[in-house]
Image (tube, rainbow, N blue to C red):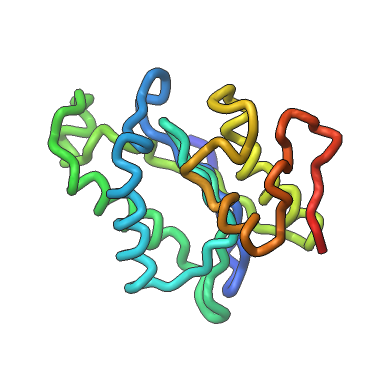
Length: 176
């Protein structure tokens, strides 16, 4: 088994990728996006964190979040988000023997990808990756066309122009 090492940094800003167990042809996250939003809000009330960027795709999500200054426990937040979301769904998924024996659901992959953001350039690169992901997967032709993203809020704040990555990939950039 691989030796997974997590970067525990109090007050850190992290990029995450979290996947459904059954990815191909599964639209569970977008079908239940309101439940996912409510779940994230509930976990944030109990275990605060700042959302810098977030995108929900049919079978996975990406986000850039920042933890409070003296807190490095992103694992509890993800455990609660995954658990609370799963508990709110009817049990219709197929379970492996191992998952059934452990009392687990067959909704999420057990692990997730995390990356500790190192600097301003790393932050911008990961924010861009979060927001361009629906285009990358062929779900839309323009980033602005994907509804399940913080992109729209960041456009309102002047961080991104509305036509950012609108098919002309040379136009990638931020306003300062």
